[in-house]
Length: 292
Image 1 (tube, one colour):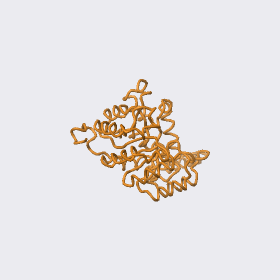
Image 2: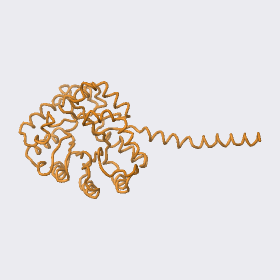
Image 3: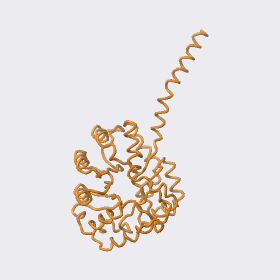
Image 4: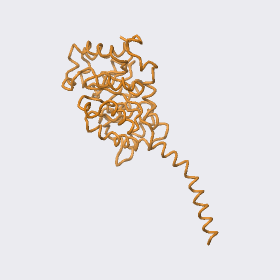
């Protein structure tokens, strides 16, 4: 009996040793860092979440870097000044929420954007809302030209007609499609990804990625075919989304863990890191680095 007990103990230790690599891999995938491609720091949370607390919230969620835009723009600027190595600032082309469905007809947008680009080293324009033929107005065309001049990415909340209009005008500029079009068929996404090498899909609120907690076959295939063109995002567009931030990040990791490790790492962090690598000038005022 004693011998049997010793053998059982030895077998248990061997099993534990054999399982350690699997446990380590599981833990690594569980806690994969996230580069969030859709964070807002709008005025409605400034009092409850001062900038230092925002950074704490990001850390608690395992978000190491983030694309940040705000209404008004000062929110992103405040976060950038506190953590220039962590915050990738994007500029919305409108100062108030009420303008998000009219800005593309406002001839003052061009001046507004130029003035704000001089404040900090913005890396993109957006997230902006525009749909259908409104993406072909002269104001939008001027905005795209500004992005081209300043080597900025675009982050568009739009429909299929709108994204096609933007891609036609900006074939040489990274275009991030917010929410990957929400419910646009995957077949249409594949068509656009094949034809436009600068299109990236940001996946917050995207329908159909999972069903009953499991990756759907069509999305698993899309991730396999275009692993470098997808970005995770939480979209903190309301105070409630900030409250839920850690849970949202856990939910994203849940489906990321179902992918091969290299694909998961790219979507979680690597793709955005490649797009928005450190420039080495993040802590310098624009005037010191020759910005306009």
